[in-house]
Length: 321
Image (cartoon, rainbow, N blue to C red):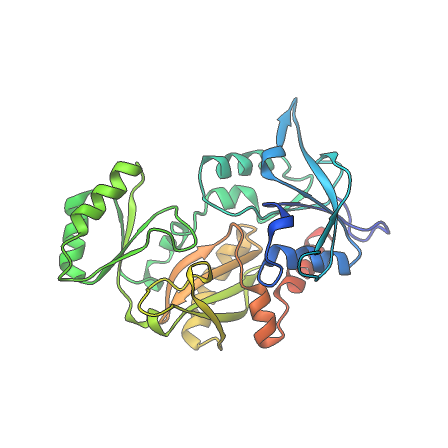
């Protein structure tokens, strides 16, 4: 791994979806590239589809990248080069969007071969081993009542106990296929049919938390420390607060309950090399720990002035030293 104290600028490769198509007003990965450029780092971007392993070497076809905060003209890309990711770069940001499927897991496996050579953020071993709805199960006392199962009788018993429930895919993202089943709703059986005929995965079932209508806090942690939060409020009667499905972001302070959650999970995140993380908290209850490509940094900066991306690069520089 390179020594940051050397005089040459850091070389950064960002594994991401096409940067040409990002929304610069809300995309945290673009903000990461922007901050890297401000610091004088050399930036490359590449899509995960060009990531390769051959004869012990991990490479990617990448393009040099310069960014500017000009809508419609936000990126300039150079000629494609093949990067030996163990030799040619100092840091890789693993920032492609989910779904967390076998393609995602395979990419994490390939990046694991770089351990001890190039710093990958977040650590790909722990990204692979920390699915966003699974890793909170390490902290059941912080969560709403939760069930992960594919067994219909167990799911029906959970519904009988908690009455008002939320059903969602275990590896979904952006609020897709999240359903509330009220006590009088007779659609649970049909919903399970839909889930179980389209996927072999278990599902997650949780007791409904009414506080979701007041908002779902996205709290950003850098190297295990809480740096700030935004509140995402659902649109109308929708229980999903994700900005991708119409939720709106608002400023919010961290409550003592929020800080207690962060103190509880922070050491585990730090130990696992999960350096930039976004957690979701509803009414003081932890629901997700997002480690793949968490967002919210730009809204946080706009509301509070807190630059979580700058704090992330500070932490990366400390690790390289």
